[in-house]
Length: 236
Ligand code: PXP
Image (cartoon, rainbow, N blue to C red; front, side, top):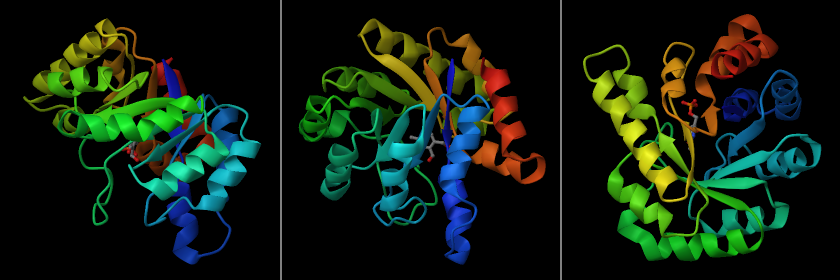
């Protein structure tokens, strides 16, 4: 299993003072040096953390892969087509949310999603759809032409350690199997941390985990190299 490190919160901290530190480019470098196999950033419509110039610089400076999270917005699609990240992950986006709250409703807007990702696929960009672990979303995703899904692990993460954990975990396991049977590659992410991540090993064939908040939070106390290395070791 690979580790994509989401560095959005480094930009959140930088933007708190409006200056240049902490430097997101340096953060990406440190993540790569310590076991991160890709760098994930979410260019939100309100640009609350990562900014256009960040992704334009990251694409030139990182030595692994850039995974750009984005909503179905035309201006962001234009930037993706211009910078050509290794992959994009299509997410739903609401302006008032603190973080991505639910998965993308692919089943409810199959034509719209299929049309939106077509130019990205044609440009050679790998497309992943961030969906809840539900049969109808997996089945719809397989019809879009996307090569990957990323399963939303938020419900599992919240249920971890409670009597709801097993049910949430089984949804992930079943959905991953269905997706793989339908020819999709499977990533997972959201809310994963140093305690709950170990169960991802029980899902055969998971390709990459995208993890941000827990790593950057730990880095406040331990430093970023240790925080990334520890997570990379846990998921190896
Ligand atoms: N994957 C996606 C699609 C996300 O939107 C996020 C949050 O930005 C993550 C993974 C990482 O979640 P967390 O910050 O909780 O690790």
